[in-house]
Amino acid sequence: MRGTLVRKAAALGALAVGAVACGDSAGPGAASVTVLLTDAASAYVESALVDIGAVELIGGAGGPIVLTDDGTDGPVDLMELQGLATTQLAAQDIEPGTYTQLRLVVESASVVLADGVTFRDGTSEADLTVPSGAQTGIKLNLKPDDENGGGVDIAAGQTVLVVDFDVNQSYRLQGNPDMEDGVTSVSFQPTLRALVDDVAGSISGTVTADAGVALDVEGLVVSAAPVENTALEPFESTTATALVQADGTYTIYFMVPGEYDVSVEAGEGFTAPVVEAVTVGQSEDVEGVDFVIVAG
Image (cartoon, rainbow, N blue to C red; front, side, top):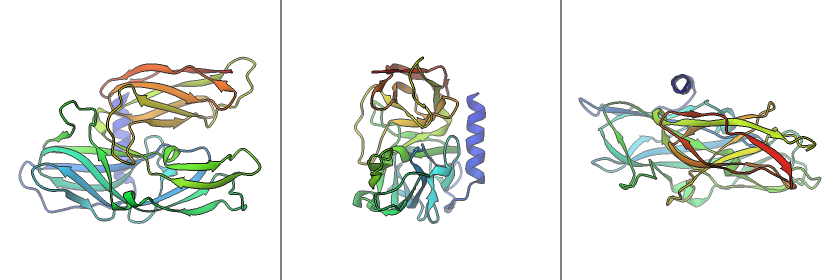
């Protein structure tokens, strides 16, 4: 099953509208690296526009390699990049070697709230302030859990790197969207993670309400957090999220191999036990990580 998912993701990336930086050939035996952008959604956001500028690859024998100066070629709606959907940020031939980080510059961000959700002044759209650190460049570790200092070996041939720009974690609503007072503001705190596509797996399951519990599970957030904490750069995360669908199912894609504690945010007055130490192997789709929400 995982092979099908990888082919689908690669095809979507090739078809997507994105800026491609094609540098001079790196010579015989060169490696080809492609950077794709994807997203985990938010139930309270209709449109999450972000403009990514320069994308660099750090490591190898020389200094940083500029893969592109204009990653998204203007604002792109992250809400259109859910599931396995991706858009291409950059593609370039490079020298084979060990590369430790990706660096991305976020130039602008804006938000349109979902239908029925408004700011306290009655509007639903806003331009957001990009933190200064994101404007100068967000560094994302490649294989940050590597005991030997991190980094990914990019050999001759094609390597696809995926950047997950998590809307649910990045666009933080201030106030209560479910109350009459609405949302006071949206704080933009870019939250991203990077991984190598061909070893990525997934976690999926169902979320249901226990008998007698009146709760609509659609739109609840399921999170997978690594069991072992690692040192992270500002704006970097190793936690992945997904929304529960109308039929009660969820799938968290693009999971780095490792052990995760998986939980669901059930909301005030409800709870569901954390599923601990879920192991995701290389290119493995882990199914049946299910939750039953109870009152309490």
